[in-house]
Structure formats: C-alpha cells, structure tokens
Image 1 (spheres, rainbow, N blue to C red):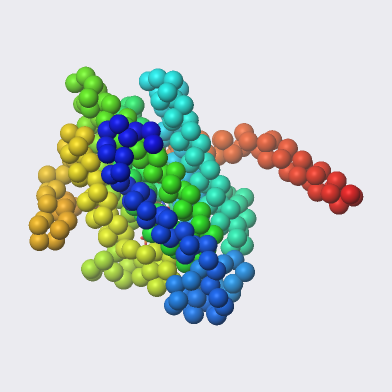
Image 2 (image 1 turned 135 degrees about the vertical axis):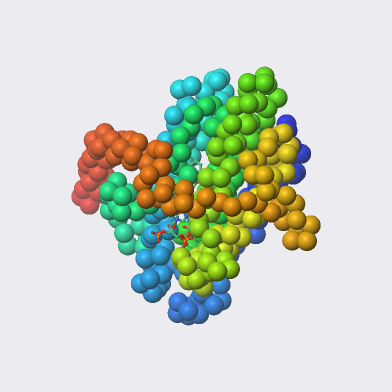
Length: 344
Ligand code: FAQ
C-alpha cells in the first residue's frame, strides 16, 4: 500500500489494520435467528430495519448516525481548503480523492439513517438550522499545508479508533457501513502520516510547520471522543444506555486512552513533541498518562463558539442551495425512468 516506505508494511498504523475488521465481517452480515429485540441484543445479534425496536433505541441511532453523517460532509471543508494549494500534483490528486471519500462516507451514513424511517432532507435541514450537531473537530481552521497532514494522522486516526468498534454495533446497516468507512479511513491516516513524515525530513521551516500543526490539532483530537464518561461521569451522557444496547462498545474515555497509546509512539517516530507536559508512560497502568483536557473549550465549540462554526455552516448551506438544480434534475430523471418502467 502507498506510504509503506516509512513503516514496516506489516506493522499496523491504526486500529483498522491487523485483521480487526475481518473479524467482525461475519458478525455484521449474519442475521439473528429470530427472537425479539431484547433476545437479539442479549445474544449479540444484529437488529435489522424490519425488526421491532424500542423508540428510544431508534432515536439514539438516528441522533448518532446523523451527527456522524454531518461530520463527514462538514469534515470535507477543512481539507478542501487546501486542494487548490497542495504542493504537488500527486498531493492534490490524493487530497481530492480523500475529500471525495468523506462525501461517500456521508452518503453511506445518511442511507443507514434512512433505514430508520427518517428522510435525508429532514436531517440536512436540522444540520443547517443548528438542531443537530457535527463533530467539534471541524470547527478548527486549517492554517498551513501541515494541517492536511495532521488531520489525516490525528483526526482520521481518532475517527478510526472510535469507528472500528462501531463495526460491531448492534444495528446492522450502521455496522456494515462502518466496515467500508474504516478501511478507507485507514488509508487516510497513512496519507496524513506520510505528509508529516515528508515535512519533518524537510527544511527547518517545514519541520516547524509540522510541529505547529501537531500542537494545534492534538487536544481537539482528544476531544473528538466526547466528554468523560467513566468514574464520576459514568452516569452522565448517553454511554451507559448506548453500551447496554450494543451501539457503543467502549466508553469515550477508554477509546481516548487507546488512541493516545497508539499515537504517542507514532509522534516519537515523526520526531514531533506532543503539546502535553504531563504525557508520560505509566508502567503500572500499562498506559500513557496525560494532562487535563480543556472541557470548557469543548462545550464552547459545541455551543457554536469555535473559530469556524459560522463559516462551516454558511458554506454548507450555500453549497446545498447551489446544488438544488442537480437534485431537481436527478429527481426528474428518476421519475421519468419510473414512468417508463411502469408503461413497459
Ligand atoms: N463533537 O454522551 P456522549 C470523522 C455530544 S467522523 C460534537 O458521549 P454519544 C471522519 C454528543 O452528541 C467524526 N458533539 O454522546 C473524518 C452528546 O450531545 P447530544 C465523527 C459531541 O453520542 C475525518 C453530548 O456531547 N464521528 O472525523 C462530541 O454517546 C477527517 C454527550 O456526549 C462520529 O460521529 C464531539 N466530538 O457519544 C471526516 C462517530 N462528542 O446528542 C473528515 C460516531 C460528544 O445529547 C476528515 N459517533 N458530543 O446533544 C459516536 O461514536 C458518538 O456519537 C460520540 C459521542 C462518541 C461522538
């Protein structure tokens, strides 16, 4: 695979590599053999769209899948900002393909949400009017080319860590969408690492640019996993119920720790310093200890007060309005085809 010039090709760089996805393939595609919702969940079988399910389960899935889909399409903007300024034709082609992949992920996810009885137009309307969220991470600006590298390495890396367990989610259409998404995100992470690997071996200014990007993206990447949900925070938020339903398989805190444990050695390989003076290996825990996350910043960004919230939504709404004629033409064409088929 492209990018294997800097690491052993057999050495997994992220949670999607090393066979984890193949292990869940069977599980995600085999249907439960009858029983009601509770039996299927207890037996760790998949719930399919035709199955009866509690209203709150359906609502939780719609909330999470919609937020996830919105994140994918809003997430096209920070890197899209660098397509015209990518430093070579090769980098431009790769970045264009990556940004298009994110649109594809949005498509799979909106389709998965539609199997729960909601309409994509309704979900987009909720995004545009601020009634549904998207990931906090996409409200930060991409100031230099190194940010394209940091997004691939850290943001896609965090996304994969969160999404590989979702391949075992109890809702079949979401689980199956996640398998393909994770395979693609895995390539995205390698390309981000490769951008930074090139920069850190370049001039002093290029290395400084890579370090500055790591400084700015590290903490927001840790926030992507969501607020604390273990210890005293175990009863807050949605984690407890979502884990009981087999939607979430790990707590936000556990996934954050796994991500840190995976990423610190990669930063060392890159020769970059992560901006946390409290980061140190804890022999007893077998994990990296890390410093306090600024949760005030996280909630501020969620309330709409991040550097780019307004810009992201305005751009999204403008793109949606400008694309109205495409949707109308596609609908007219589909109607015509349906009429032809009805006559034949
Ligand atoms: N940003 O109780 P929890 C990507 C909200 S895709 C904004 O922990 P939950 C690909 C949460 O909604 C990145 N809001 O909630 C890519 C809830 O609010 P609500 C997106 C957040 O749902 C890469 C409240 O806080 N990935 O990056 C965030 O059980 C590069 C309490 O939180 C997914 O969406 C946040 N970071 O767990 C694209 C994965 N965290 O709804 C382009 C699927 C929490 O009550 C370029 N989603 N909140 O008003 C999930 O796994 C979960 O929904 C969590 C949150 C883990 C995000």
